[in-house]
Figure (cartoon, rainbow, N blue to C red):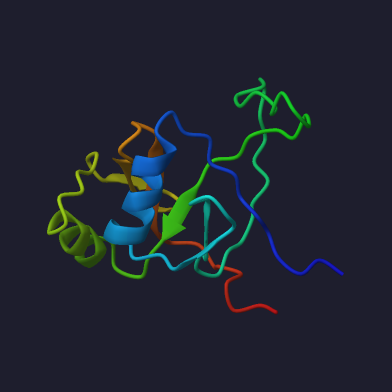
Length: 126
């Protein structure tokens, strides 16, 4: 039985990105040793999208292919205002069929998506 999911984020500045996740996004964590933090995420879901080309190269260690991380919120404007008060900068909001979406950079320069879904979600399913 699958008991959870573990996402990997590869960073050129892991210490700064960990501090951002902890201090700015307020994600709780456990320490796995030597300052290595593992963060709790909000409930999650996964969607499989078609791809004509390999857009995310697989991890060179185990061959697992890449994923894109989008955090979801109920009120995009309110969530953005809250994070802007913590000096988070956002790309312009784009309206897609599936939701209102923006991105924000981590200190390393990697981007995370943030969106308010217009589609049904699987978050309440167990």
